[in-house]
Length: 119
Image 1 (cartoon, one colour):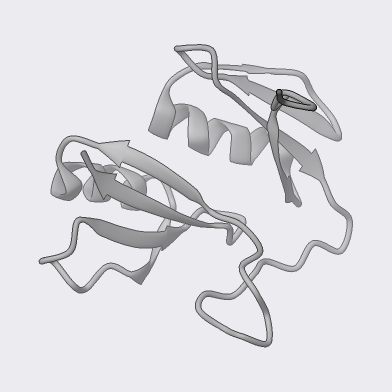
Image 2 (cartoon, one colour; image 1 turned 180 degrees about the vertical axis):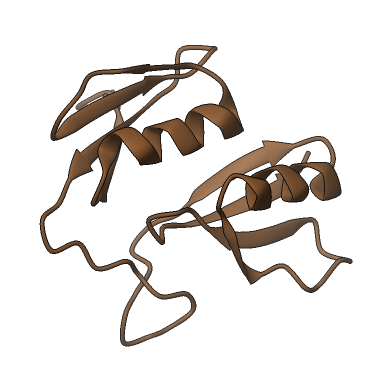
């Protein structure tokens, strides 16, 4: 028996509205809220939240002394098409050079690592 259910995954960032907008372009959905807390309601019932963090310092990937702490795996049908899209939206590649793998690693505009994963 579960002790709890997952409410939402929350990403700290310097600008919640801007980062929610980035993920809305990547995942679809509706951005709700203003100020220090913004929600992204994603089709299918999932949700992401974005919280303003004064003094935010992005994680480094990969770095044992500055752990990424968490990352998102985003499932896509075509890695090349998805890559072009996230790069156009402001993502930057962290480890996307191995084209034989079924995943590629990027950082969102606030520096959070995420992977595009082939389904």
